[in-house]
Length: 291
Length: 272
Image (tube, each protein chain N blue to C red):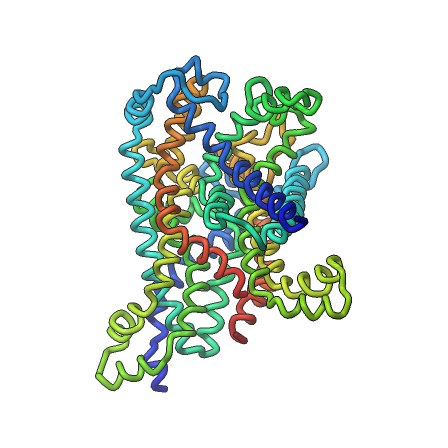
């Protein structure tokens, strides 16, 4: 066929090869290496069956709490960023002066490295000298001042809050773009039919904003499951193991040379995300074909 | 009247929001100009005396020149390589949607969801002899940018009319010349968007060098600032100055190219 001559497949080979070698193959290798005792102390690698997974699922270890934390982080940030982002987008949709300035400011945290955000908030959330507690004390709300990143009850919540601070602007801007693409005539028609604000939100805004909401949710989900820097910089899993998530645990296993267990954890995540990703990506590429 | 109250409220909310985003960054900027003792409580007050010297101390002690050049090298080369590899693949997948090409397009884009297995990737890096090398980091940064870049470009190429290709074929262009002389220039807008985004992502990358670069002389700015923080935790004035210098390049790029960045980061997602 002429098409195959004009647009030859081999043009894509280099792209496919590097992608496969450095992203897909390590993922697949994980299935084998998670069944071995691979570690940094011996050069021999022995097959040990499901022992690593037994370790992961045994009650004496912390691994299940890492899985729980990762899911907790993912669900919390998805809900917080979406709810806050939507609320702010609706509030700020119309009648804002200096729109450009606010847009630049609100989006700013999204482009700053998470590492820097983490360091900044290590200072802001410092129990003794941090800006947050100082401000709370200054306005007389002493009882609200907490040992944010040190207290077991607050550390994980603080990480979620910092991550929401960084991500909410981005989500808001996406939703704002979605809101502005909704034609005013729908709202006018709804008003004629006697709809109140809630009805307009429920039956006009929400359905028409659905595509954008699906996208932001997918973005937040993928990000949340892979979270590393936010936790690594703010608490490094502490106090104790209270705030460790999957990727920080994998890094710790890696640093300790326990590659087998690290791979097993990684492989669980790989399996879950690739299967879930299969359906999400199919949805994304389908939508593209139609448009 | 009612309208005025509403307007004041909304604009007030907008200002509160903007200030919430700005204040933590401002805090770092003012403290970067203080002395060590004045910066210790990390207050949001202007310095009594502006210590410009903090910056030269940081540049020397934090090896910022080397790490700045490293970051620049990694970000620029991986962006260019990524765009070259992604655009040609997206072009073929979009123009010639055979069963095989559709499958490989899906396979590539699936990478958006696929998490990296850093542990086994170490083995691959050892086999290919690029572990702890600058080239190795460039390769990895390029590879992780591919899935999303291919996805964005695929969508864009679909809207570039095919008639131009046909004109090129009639004029006797070879397949490769057709791509880089006729189609690639038409992709300029999406290349600009993707280029800025990928450059910033590469600049902000922390995890890959953390795993695969042991040699501090090869560290990018993110890793250098983290290490500097570890050493100088008590000197928040210096840490602040280091943070400012690390973040400045991204902020400058952001302010210059914010139209591309915001529209690129949102349009790519709203479309789906």
